Image (tube, rainbow, N blue to C red):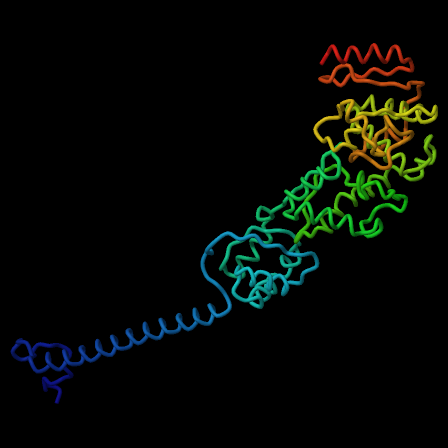
Length: 381
């Protein structure tokens, strides 16, 4: 059969005539069409299944998490000691994350970073993925610090007004906490025994700049500058050193410091004013201070007083009454506290500023010299 020309067809042309084999062509076309149809069905089915799978995954994921970059800015307070789950709950309540447990899970996947989460106030976004929320809480630039300033030389009502503006707690609420709390509850030192006619925390709201506590309350805000006073007083050994002063009492030394803060602002003058006050007290001379009268008549923008002011029957009127006023008249800063503890040596019994621009002050033990210095002040004015 070697000469037989039949073999398996591997071409679409007739081997004898060389013409197109239409029957074979139709057969193969049908085969190719079947393969193409099968491939198309497979491709479409694969795309359908992939689309469904992605949709199922997104639906599953969206049940516990948000996607995207967020909707709006929001500020969130994280309290001290909050667990990761507690933080997640706070974020969920603020609509930052969709589910607290999702945030906890995101944090558990990054344990080293999650340990660095800190209490504070943060600027975040609503409706963001849990992982993004974690990133934001770890970003120092997202931390929001609200500061409040307590200025030296101000009376407590002025200080509370500044603290109220910064903290959002009303001045009345801050004052109410002071009124209804005991000295111990406020954290005042045990030697703070203000008489009934003295404001309880006057002089103890230490002048400085502070960060407002997270989730502030009237009590927490008031205690911040009081705690700083205690720290400064401790560093100065204030209570013990006060016993070595002429008045021998830390409460009275604080009153002296509060007067110093209102009377002069040059550092070199503070210890001299302290000596003047102690010398006059030792000699039984009335202090005759406009600063205490201004406190008595509720003048806050000046220490200058009128003859009518000096007729006040307030115990803070040192023109009318002997000795120190019942309590502090301002918040003394550290320099004033130090001056009250360490008066300069000298026999001065008078002082008066003679140049309000420079703060230059004249000190003397002569009434005539004092009157001459007062005339210089009048001339300057």
